[in-house]
Length: 394
Image (tube, rainbow, N blue to C red; front, side, top):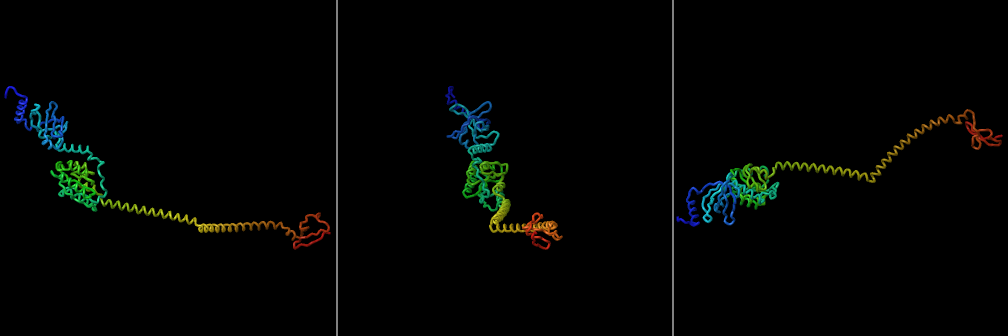
């Protein structure tokens, strides 16, 4: 190398040296992302990786960046796999990142949390968007694998609780690379078949086994389904993005079957109770109407002129009887009193005196009480005990 170098020669030389140094290839470096930029046109990631004392520029080209299951952002602590090289134009060294993992959390977990956050901001999980499940669905669709043990459990429960429902199984792969697309196609097909309700899910498994139900595609197809959807994925502790997007989340597939339909035994009990209440109410109403009818008939009968005349006649007859009885009693009392008074008066009767030899003298039909009332030539009548005689005063 000559004694005098151009800047380009220097940068190229340093770049060559770093490229040849095997110790600077595929290094694992821990740091915090800052100044993160996702270049819209190129798809490259540009950022600075730093710790508490130093920082270094970094770039992750589109081919590598598109493989990440999560989206990096400023403030995130990561471990990157990178080659250390010089960017010749600016004469600075930087990291050319080929892979990246969150520091302290798995990439899949982080990607899932970011997906939940993004879908939540878009309103995919909003309660206001959730549809009301039918109380008694006639047609029920089940989207799951035909090989799943959970399918038979759901079919048995539906047949026991609500045998009148028509159940259709829409087969779908629930695990593997093609599972999301298979689930979405099955849900879309079921949505066009006039189902009243869909159950979408599978039995338990690992986080990776359930990953199909943690994808954006499945969440959006469930949320966009016009048919109400119950999500039933894994065990009670499992909680997927599909659960959040569905109209109702069931803790298990068996629980989903129980939540989907009512129990016919309970319905028959309710029906019998309603029938009894209706019958009792009807009988009570009829009794009430019959009593009101009887009262109305009595009131109408009371207003009938014939009935009223008859009642008045009966009252008159009763009054007549009471008056006759009272008259008889009064007459008897007066007769007794008259006899008593007559007997008393009889003791003072002038006739009694006449019988003893006395007589009464009447002048002009008036009793003469004194001789001074008589004059010579007066005609008088003399009343004796056995008759009357006439005389002239001389």
